[in-house]
Amino acid sequence: MTDWWASMNDEDGGEASNQNTHYMVRAQNDLFMVTPDTEQNASNDLLADGLRDGVISRDTLLRNGANICKFLMHTPAMERFLGRTSEEELEARNSIDKDEMIYFDMEYQLVDKEAKLPLEDLDTAKGGTNVFALTVKDKGFYDLKLKLRAQGGDLAQLPLTISMDNRIITTITLKGSENQWIEKTVDIGLIFGNNAYLKIFFAQGGMEIEDMTVSLREVFDMETFRAMMAD
Image 1 (cartoon, rainbow, N blue to C red):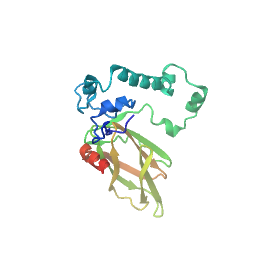
Image 2 (tube, rainbow, N blue to C red; image 1 turned 90 degrees about the horizontal axis):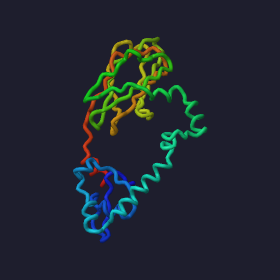
Image 3 (cartoon, one colour; image 1 turned 180 degrees about the vertical axis):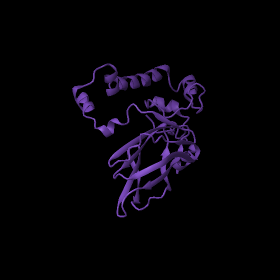
Image 4 (cartoon, rainbow, N blue to C red; image 1 turned 135 degrees about the horizontal axis):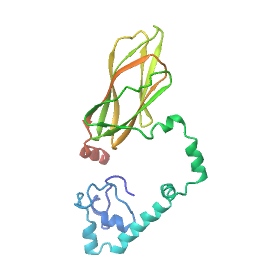
């Protein structure tokens, strides 16, 4: 499999291009990432031209397809699909921690530019772990906006840790004496896939959240990204 939008050289040493998929196929690189529309050939690759001109043959394409199928047939996912889950995997599945299981069977929150997260069941007690499953309409850079306050003694330190996809973004710490509502904006970074998981962890109790909103700050520009990768 190629890297995303990989460029391939031709056999004559010409400039590499992501249109040279016929040479990639002949070299037995079986899968090109990524093709937005194969029916319309949105990437204008030369696969059909290579087939017509004899650079590759139908047998070459069948070989690549067979390579992919052989790989799939030996994956754990196929074993599970066929009902052949190993004893080791069953044991591991049954020993999943509570915090790991929280990602399953969740209601996804659609973020169309902006979305307020539901707070009815928010667990703000000591050790409270809250995971929000997000489905974003646009690939891009997102912020989390919070309105929160602390309720505690003057010496209390109340930390709130924010993670995205199990990667810690930041920890917000309020003093117990800060019992006025304050607003914070946290850069939660690039969401490139359709789904993402936002985790809010309360190491101590005594913090209140009135509002949490995920908002799109900047749409991801693919052309800019390609230029950055090329540099």
